[in-house]
Length: 185
Image (cartoon, rainbow, N blue to C red; front, side):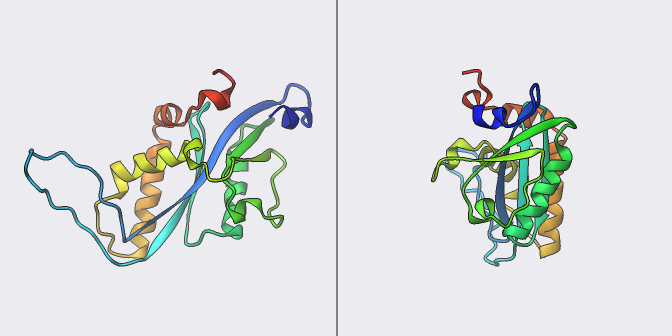
């Protein structure tokens, strides 16, 4: 982080952003639910395989995010997501975008916006990325234990779930903060 700061103009406001993707589709996971002890509640389970990807990034310090729902997880989709994140960074600020080492994150084909610097997480360490916890929250509350009728419904419900999350900045702040990354712990 200090190396990144040294390359920026003095007094540049730096914000930490976290990025990840989640596949959401007809083959949903079953989540826990409350039930009377000894009972076996039913839950819908679809075996079809249509899916979409939520590309999501959040800035927990500000309680904001930038997301896209796309049909594929590839370099082109990542470029669109970087452009969307860049549009949400506070003017005159710089975003350090922490993300995993997926091939579409590390390719030299990406045109990284001037107000973003990518900072990859260590390999095989998804538990360090709070967006993983946001995906779990979204699945537990809005996306699991359901049957999607079509691809269009998957996209619509992913957009609805992301927008519900963005409408709750306190949720982004509480789930997304990492003391070790914010320099206060």
